[in-house]
Image (tube, rainbow, N blue to C red; front, side, top):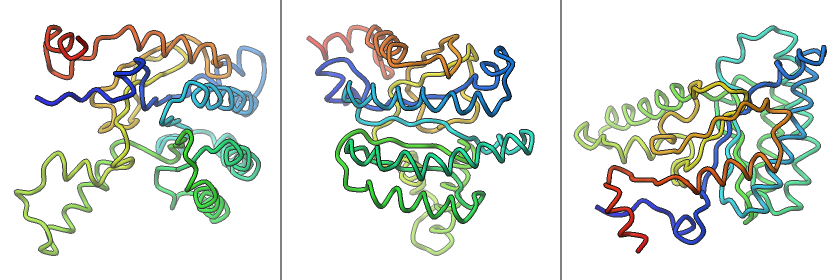
Length: 252
């Protein structure tokens, strides 16, 4: 059985790919007598802090769950404010990312967004495409079930067209069609606010991820909290189906 440990893990014990479910903006705001929108705005600073620390720690890839496909069910005024905040970030923050050699990608169903947001996503990705630092991925209007259904549909279309036989549809074929195909799998998934569920996030990509749950609400999560999550990860023994002895032998 070949090892699935990455070269970076073998070198310093840090994950290559960290995913974050940013939760607790509304609760943070309510506890202070603010509107939910104020909480989302406060969360932007935590986004900056985590991106900065991930780049400093030389994490290869950071995926942030910004807006799920289920979030459209929220109050209309909150959704509208979130869209405005997303557009503002695309206009104001991308230049800073580019200056720091950070590559930006957005995953999710873009058809749900306004033409302006779609246009700025394309511009941001084009501007940062050749950057070689941290790869920052924003999951927006994203759902893990949507991701898998789209991948299955793409394979079905190839089978229907005679380009692929049904017997060739396996894990590798499906994995080649999901979002983030070709990227390192998620090593560590962080969720803030004390909730302990994945909420339809990266269902395929989280198959062997380590999970870290913190009671901190997202606006209170900073670079130091990110370091604590990395430290907890480094203390885990990742087996990938093997025994402790087999894993230890790989590190000997």
